[in-house]
Length: 160
Image 1 (cartoon, rainbow, N blue to C red):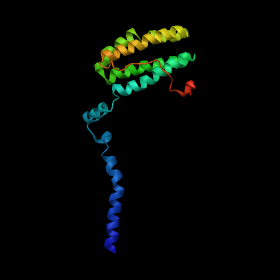
Image 2 (tube, rainbow, N blue to C red):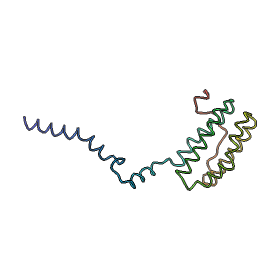
Image 3 (tube, helix red, strand yellow):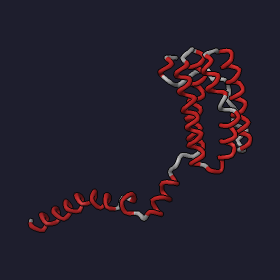
Image 4 (tube, rainbow, N blue to C red):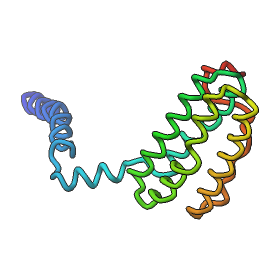
């Protein structure tokens, strides 16, 4: 009987200590600075991750302007610029084409939004779409083409 009680006590002690062992081995607390840096770099968003969000912003930008929600369109444009800046940090090899895009193509986007004129915006959007695909081609992803969005994803736009 005592042996059974002792074994239960040992098992219980081991089971309750497992979370403490796991917490003690958390790399964020125990790894060297170099290992921590390696792990953080490994989990940085890849181009594909950033471009998925960019695609959502692209769709919402188009539909916000089409629906006359110019402030929301401006917000989408700002977020797109931030994503490109993030891309330059996480994927330094894309910095040149990202900078070219920000310098040559992107400035027309906020300008067109400020006009609050769908026709002007629409012409600019077509140019932007073309420049995005040119950037894809420069980065060996020419197979990624962008259609005119058929719908948006943001509930702000109240599309069904």
